[in-house]
Length: 310
Image 1: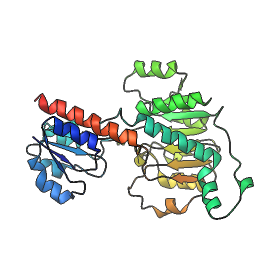
Image 2: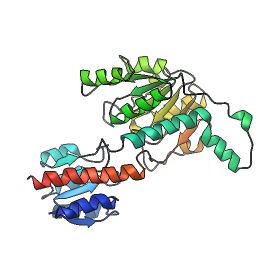
Image 3: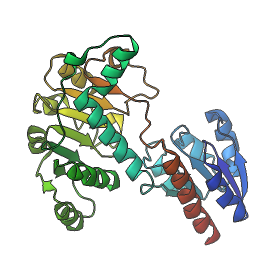
Image 4: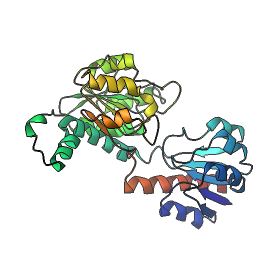
């Protein structure tokens, strides 16, 4: 059986495929047109976020049995078309939890202490100590919208720093997840609106779906406290970016830190040009050595097990 790896994958994952007897083809820069032509030759394909497995590509996947996404989000895969063609899809939601949570925490600290702005001006030869009066995280409330693996890790980190943690989620696991959140000291909120009104930090942890699009809309952003900071390491579609920028410029909220955007690579110059109380990073939440290896090996193991059991 042949496996196409169309995005960069760590050698540890590739070695798992090869040690299980699969033929591996690596093409980390394959174009959409070439993928459309070649996909019929493969039994499995591994993607990260660059490759988009759209319906027209999967229509040509005559022999494809399994797709592996070395990461969490599946919005670059047409799941309906995969289901129609009986193609199994695996991802690795367990892999990046700590890495993404640590970046979210880092963005919270950077926002609270104005670290990126202070660094930038120091490199410009300025000593603006009195401009960078920040605030402590201890004693503040972190609001988590969504409560999956990443949010759980961030909640534990925040509690260790002396923060209170509030959670709003539809809880895919129902009462089990609610009990788990309460068990580590989180308070449960009945609505997004209630949480937004109460928390000083809001961190998003939801997938990109029609239901979650613009979950932080203009009206909801207006509910937030003036000292509030928004952190998004999940998906860009969760926030109305124009409304967010307006809120930042008008000092309706204190700040925001974004690692994800509606359009990636980021092309919105209005976001790039505004740096007063906005931190931007280029979708690096899962970019740690440890996570890259874990995602690669986890997806490879899942795919090998599935294919060998057919």
